[in-house]
Image 1 (spheres, one colour):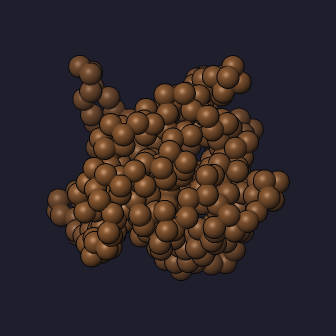
Image 2 (cartoon, rainbow, N blue to C red):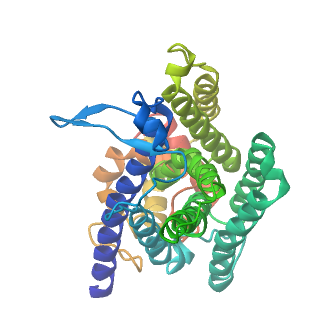
Length: 404
């Protein structure tokens, strides 16, 4: 009991920290993408002569701000130079902590689904870590290859490989675990971009200035490319972070297609926002094509996941007898976790506070039960071995009015 209580606190604090640091990292990332795309040519000649390529005037919190960007670097470095990297590192470390705490330490619950693939716990963890490492190595290799000279070709190859990864993960792990692993892979690529490319490049620029050398602009070019990639990854990663709350997505029959479509929608919508930042270069106009594509993808997913009509009712049982059969299934397969005092190891309280340990509780939770059971998201990892016939019994009862 004490061990589970401690686990809950670690999970709570880890999630809280991950949310805080994620907001800080994404907020800074979004701001600098916005800033880069709103810079205007400097209005003063002395700024241009000093190497300033663009500037922006803004008002916020009762004050006026005038950020400026240099083509490469200022003639003399200021005594105090702020670096943006701890936000990224802290987000990754807190996210990896949660991944280990929930999905690796409890792989048999959250990561492994025997109905998908009967992996042992060590193998599942090793495969999960392998995707994080190999995902970064392959991505980085592509970005350093001649393919990187063509941004569209590079983006197409990366997108194709990510589609393959989504398919593979959903055929290896539980839907919930696959989605989190996919998000963790993208998150790893994002922070590795900061750690291995963006920050080292910035250090090279600073070091060159300190030594009186002319900085090589290639470092800024490479860093900008990786920053742009990161901003397109952001919305898909955020979807993955919240996906465990929506079994209709990861529990779908073709969950890998849902994962690909939702990720593509997020990237397309983000692309529209990035383009919109530069609307001043096009007379205030921004093509809505990428936004429309993103919204159409979301609409297509929502339509594809629409619950189907109930099958014809075929039972000779009275309502009371049918409910008794359903209650017996729920008691055996669900109430071990969803009870005031859970008996399933690893659970000290009912998930989401949802109770199914009495007739009254069952009757008030039919909508939630229908969503979770039909998607096979529950029982989680099918720990209690609910059969397809039992699922059909409960779902048919719910779809025909939950008679009792």
